Image (cartoon, rainbow, N blue to C red; front, top):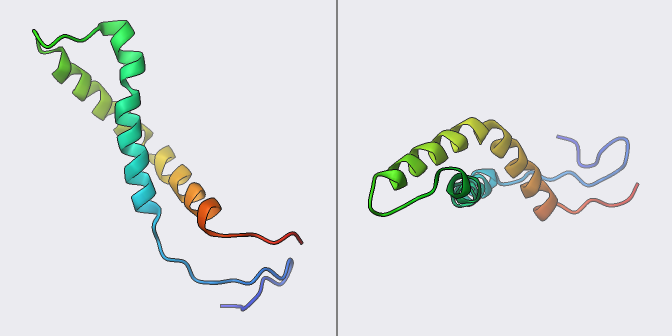
Length: 87
């Protein structure tokens, strides 16, 4: 691996892969944010099984959004931990 980038001379360093930790946090946040669209449309009550329907719908949304969440968590990790110098 090169010490510096040949184009911008940014010092290159190996990074620890903490992207999965940020991915987990985004997944949990998305699970809780699903209530903002689910509650006005379907409603929830503790008297029936609607909480289980909400959990099933939230799980489906998270599974469908997982490829996007993995990419955005990686980008967030890089922006938070790495500092880039101006070329």
